[in-house]
Image 1 (tube, protein in one colour):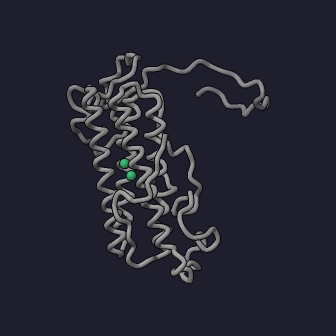
Image 2: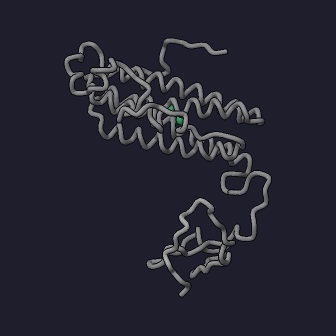
Image 3: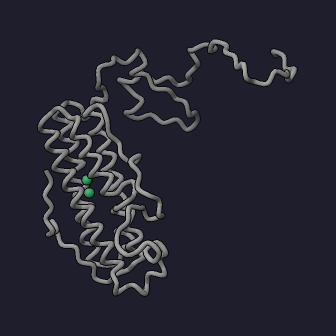
Length: 246
Ligand code: MN
Ligand code: MN
């Protein structure tokens, strides 16, 4: 069951409307790192998560993200309001498609479900969510750098802040499962190369915690797979180039 309340969780009040900035804001409405992506990703994940606590967390955050979608939508609506209609010719997307938010990003590309990262295992999902929150936070930072309206900026700083909170919640949930620093999850045992790291980009080589003990560092990796079995393609061209083995 869903309820909707028309009051916003925090104020959304644009000082000086700017349809061009409205276009920027579409990135967080119908874009890859946007609020629709976040809301649907966490909500859909919640269906297949067995742990009741983590399911509840995902649902709480998903609904908050729908609230964020609403706030970004209200920002875009105010930036493209009728009063500013004369400025819309600067932004063909609003001039032709109409004022207010649309489910496209700042370049006009339609929102797509391929932005969503979910499926199969709660550890996999929570890790994907930390990456999603990082992407959303970074987009808000870029928007704030481009924003010269105090009212808009206040809302954007709040939205950026909440993504930090969500990332922390996902990290705490992983930590509670012992999976924040342990990369192993699932039911398949890895093979013997699990602690081996390869120096495959050679020159100016660096060492750090990612390639020192407990890792085994292979400074000069060599192929250990031999030649693959010969295969044939009956449809390929039958004339020969005349090449012979060296
Ligand atoms: Mn959000
Ligand atoms: Mn978030």
